[in-house]
Length: 384
Image (cartoon, rainbow, N blue to C red; front, top):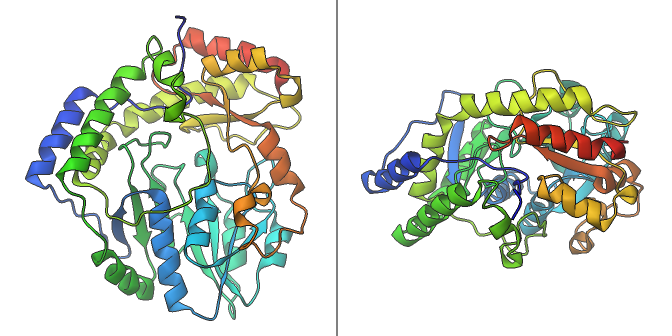
C-alpha cells in the first residue's frame, strides 16, 4: 500500500506513555491554579463547556441565550443545548473566522447569558470584538474563550470569564481526550467548584483502555500504517457528528499524566508545525484565503478550496495526503438545533460558504518536505 497521511496527529512516544501510566499509580498532582484563575480537569472539552454554561445559568437565571458562531465545532452547539439554553447564531468573517462586528452587535441583548469566542486553528481573536461585548455595561454577558484548537493561549491575553481547552486526538495537544476549564470570575468559581466535586472519578479500567489507545495511536500514525485505521469505517476517523449526549466526568488520572508528559513536547511540536505552515503560507495564495499570521503553528493548516471542481478520484487522492474538509455544515444547517436556536430564519451566508470550502493541510511531524510539496501541488489548482 502507498503511504497515507493522517490529517492531524501527535506522537506521544512510548516512554511518555509508560511514564503516564506509571503516574496513575503514583497519583501525581500538579498545582495548576494561579492567583487569578482556577482550573478544573474534565473528561472532554465539551463537558468543560457544559459545566461552565450550567454554572453561568445558575448565576444568572434571567438570561437564556448563548451566542456562538454560525460556523464552529458541533460540540459547542451541543453543549449549549445540553445546558438547557438557547442558541443565537452570528455570522463570521471569512478572512479571519471572527464574528462580523455589526452582526455581533445586533445579536447582543438583555437575554444574552454568554458569548463564545472560538480561536480557530490558533488564529487570533480580534480584541475589539471582546471589548464590544465587555463594554455592554448594563447587560454585560459572560465571555467564554474556546481555545480547543489553540494550545496554550495566555489567559491574560483576552479579557474573559472562562477558558476551554481540549486534548483530543485532533487537537494541538493529544492526551487521548480530556478537557480543561479555566475560570476567572469569582462567583463562577464557587458554583463550578461545587458542581465539579459532585462529578464521578474515573477508575482504573478506563486508564488501561486509554493506555492501549495511546500505543495504537503511535503505531498507526506512521504513513506506512495509517492506511489501516483509515479503512476501518467504524473508527469514524475524520467524521464530524453532533454529540447526542455529553457525559460529565472528571479527567482520568492517565489522561492528566499523559497531558503533563506531552506538554514537554510542545516547543518541539510547535516548531515542526510552524515550519510546515510557513511553507504552506508562501504557496497557498488566492483572492479568498484566510489571513494567516507569519508566526503560525496550528495543529492543521486551513485553506479554502473550490470543492465543486474536486471529483471523487481527486478527493480520495487529497485524503491520502491528509487533506480533508473541516466541519461539513454550518451550525445553521444542523437539524439537531432546530428547537433551541432562536434565529435560524436569518442569513448566514459567510458561515455556509466557509463550510463548503474550508479544507485543512497536515503539519504534523510525519510530514516530510517531499510529502508537503506533493500536498501543495495537489491543492494549488483548487485554491479560491
